Image (cartoon, rainbow, N blue to C red; front, side, top):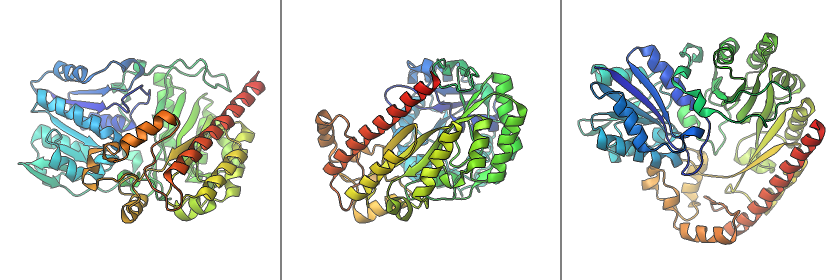
Length: 486
């Protein structure tokens, strides 16, 4: 009798793929390994470059190959709402073929809609609430060892036909106490990229695959549109510099990785910790690169920090501006960053050779012609390599969602009773009109919110103008870099 655990990374989208390794599954694999309760641990990822043809049948064959003479748990990651329809489809197929398997899911969307999911999805047996590193072994013991349910905190599950919601576990204060993520359960060859044309300013010959690193959890800023605190809470917690460096060095020595993507919401928040980490990397003389997937705080950047960042190998950082309007950015979103701080941060990065990605969001309820013009003006002024202009989306659990629900600002109308399905576009009454509009306006995007003082049609026109401006700005910097590197 063997206890099997299969960790599943569902398709991120219906088309294409990504070569991102799932940190959530890495941490769960590490915790499961340390528990000693699983004879077989495997990771099934629908998103790898060499997994384009992977299907649910392939997953079912993987489950069958492990043997059905023991107990099997399938844990399906679900960070965002748009992924949940895939999660449900996968779970249904598993249950139809292997009814005795325990299927669980977790992430931002399941955490918020745990009760609705267990009430309505017989194919899903349990939902992990928030961080599950410390609670996952308890679920393993419950299922594999028939341990008493009384101590099973951090889960919503179905017992004897009834939905049971246990108390949510406290957030993990000591991140250094977590076991090393289960890198050994990944086949990294499936994530290989042709990196020969990647930007390599120090000539280190970038490894064919990169890996994510998480050095801290949560962010104290609490922006009105951000839902990450649903999973991570409001209290910033970090690993010590030595612990982070040991993991980086391990991955460099054992797997040959020299490119890392920082997944933190704000890696530079604790200044002394970050300075120590940079100095450990610099003094080790290992040649590596970093970029930051999420936006770091501009307030934390000064000459000393950006100089150490570049010397430690940071070659790309994402800076979360969100709006060119001081009113929208600070009073509405809660960023509390001045225009002068923004311009200075981008110049500091440019001066030391760090490329930047500038994050913007449009379509907030308070956006107007004037605020969007201020965003266009700031895009023109900042010295950035790349830009990302996103559409504001009211995620459940955020202040923005509460505002839209209170003031009836959902574009086309959201059905609050079916939000748990993750099929928000299916709830939009104007969906057909939107797709017709796409035929004539290929750059038009779905706007989820009806602003108070600007029409959706005008918002779409401004969006197209901003996208063109962003492309022009990014292209100009790419050409500038090519001339300098020639």
